[in-house]
Length: 134
Image (cartoon, rainbow, N blue to C red; front, side, top):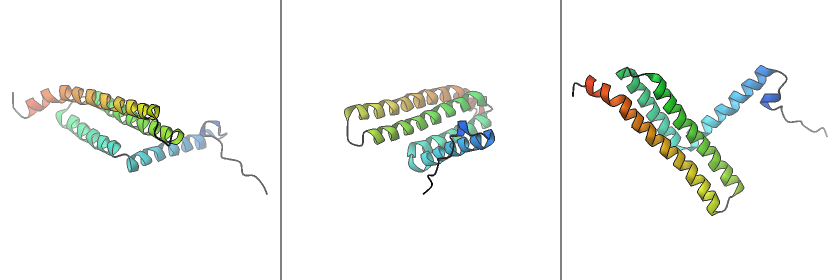
């Protein structure tokens, strides 16, 4: 019975474009998994879309808005990955596993809060001006 060899890792594939395509496929699968299984990820995507729409409407620079969205979503994805790894290696309750998951979640909370504060600082002056409140 012949043994099956696993496909080459994306970085070691002799055909670089095929390896690159596989890397993107794995990454997209991760985004899909996060979208399906993580309520907070979906919520943050919706909030990011609202922030982008608001930035366009208020003619605020898109660069800081996009950077903040990328930071929050990227950190949420890392938090999701860390939780999966912790659950894999520590299926039963362990205080260190809880600490790792809590600290990772706290990082998303802190970055999201700071992103919201920066959003207020970016959007409030043009919003007040646009609505004629000042």
